[in-house]
Image 1: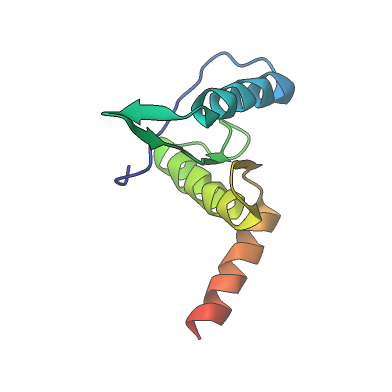
Image 2: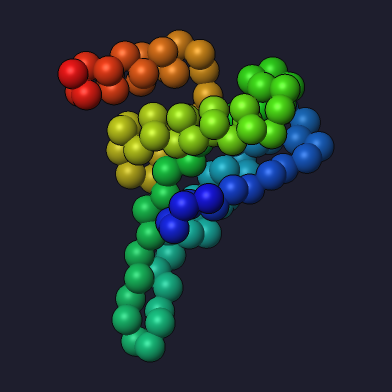
Length: 101
């Protein structure tokens, strides 16, 4: 992914609630400051989630949709996560068109 982006692939997740617990655990673990040579580093993370096969049938589609959901999460505020949905994707695309115009 990009310089400050990474991808996590999870298999055998039973349901959306389990996935939300995993995402919240990632957020909590990254909320603690990290120290590098006595310099405190604090992260805020935005997570985009796309599900196979309900959202996409290929890896390329999954990544694109997770990326779209991540940008939705960023717009919603720091330390947020967002599940991909077609409605949010259309709304985000419309917003981008207006901004670019």
